Amino acid sequence: MASWYDHPQYFDMVFRDETAAEVHFFEQAFSRFGEGHICRLLEPGCGSGRLVAEMAARGYELTGVDLSQPMLDYLDRRLRRRGLRARLRCEDMTEMQFDESFDAAFCTFNTFRHLIDEQAALRHLRNVASLLRPGGLYILGLHLIPLDADPECTERWTAKHGGTTVHVTLKVIDFDRRKRREMLRVSVKAEKRSGKIERIRSEFPLRIYTPAQAKQLLGKVSDLYEIAGIYDFDYDIDEEREFDNDLTDALFVLKRR
Image (tube, rainbow, N blue to C red; front, side):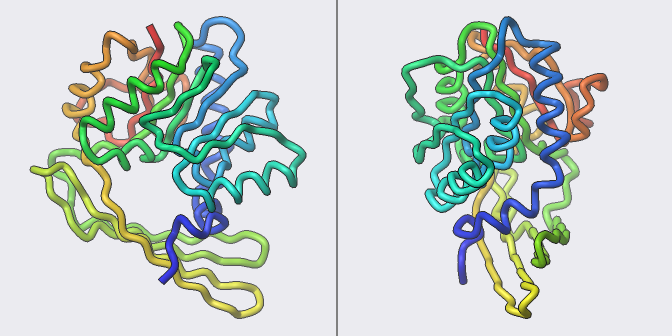
């Protein structure tokens, strides 16, 4: 069965409804927490590039990094179709190297949790810090797992675009709090206007973070970042959150020291 990451068009359909709220929040965060002119932006784990394309359309200079070449090829076609430009790199988000520094970076919707051990997570945070100028921002979004989380979680949703309907089921098939790892299965059923049906299934691990574990991790890079603001996936710049056990959909605005 085909892989989720080899079909960027379906991946993109699932998340595109979040794009407007996310980029609006980015610009508000730049205004509230940023220093100086913010133009050069980096997205580690950019996937199909919905955020890269939208921020490029708003006049920013974008660099997108991802390990999936099919995702980057899809993004390249999208940019060309819209008359936009961005620099794209197929490489590890813990070992990115560029000659110039960035004004801000962003990584949302659990991409960070694909780094499945603490060493990789710390390498990534330090890598991004090395690429940001002093005062630069890193907007990092991930789901945190409460202590009473249901390990049998299943989510379902449907997305439609251009005559294609995509049904997605996301199921936790293994949950190990001690090892801090959950295994997810994503099943996709794509129905085309022609009547053709395509099925895709992918399984992949994500690292588990409780609020306390996320706080501990960020504490280990406190020499590099200060936490400028804490929000959730409502993307409301006027509704800051506390770093407590009620924080589950976490959106951190980190500022490079």
